[in-house]
Length: 390
Image (tube, rainbow, N blue to C red):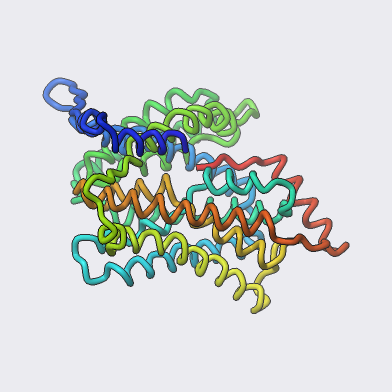
């Protein structure tokens, strides 16, 4: 939050030219006749964010093998709510932008939820919220990240270079062999993953996907019985949360207000994004959850009221990191990206404020005795398997 605020201040001060000039400085890594040359902003969005996605991949693998995504019955309600929470914002965005060929490509921007921000706001509410509802939000946000990864792979891939895709099979095979060996050493996996990142980047597929793929080959247990996955996730998370994410926020949240009018504020792009995050997420998450429970296909989280479920649905509209990232994949024009930043910040801020107020002042209900065990189990699961926000 502080990094985003600092970017906003600098982008609207006398330092604005230096801020944007620095982000557009070319940075080159050469090896012989070949190499990579990209502006600094793309090294942040393609390179550093690959590490962010690597952490997401570790989280997904852990949850699928031993956590909240292991049992299908526990995933039905948040899983379907996540689907609704991605579809409704995209449809609302398209409602505003369907006839604008310059902006329609950004339909996935409001479909994403920022786990770190959503969980941060939920933590401010404290113990007023049952643990089962916290698990619901965490599971929903994890599945939302998975959906965002799939969307990026399918819809935000540049022109494919098949030769580099074939070459990427070499490090992929290397990762498979390293995983099968059960070696406790992580360095070889990281090095081979960097080679995979290079080939994926050159192929036209977005390079951050290489981070997720590499994470899936980190062993949950090695031949010594320890967990490389847990060790890497635990060791990497502080660097992601306190270095990579703040740098990304600083580089991507610099909304320039100079020359902006109310007409710009209510243009189709920022309005579609803000409405998608604030209205679409509520409709999709809460609407699908309510429908699933009323149809008898799932149960409302133990000890939660529908008003509290609605508050969590509001928090799901905090898009920030992933929304800004998808925005950077959608548009290269600086003016359009400025409108993306404005829409994401407005939609996320409204979602966070309304979600907090609803949860803070919603009355709790007594938990029936037959559901108390479920809530206690949820609290135990949360304590034993903390989710790393992403």
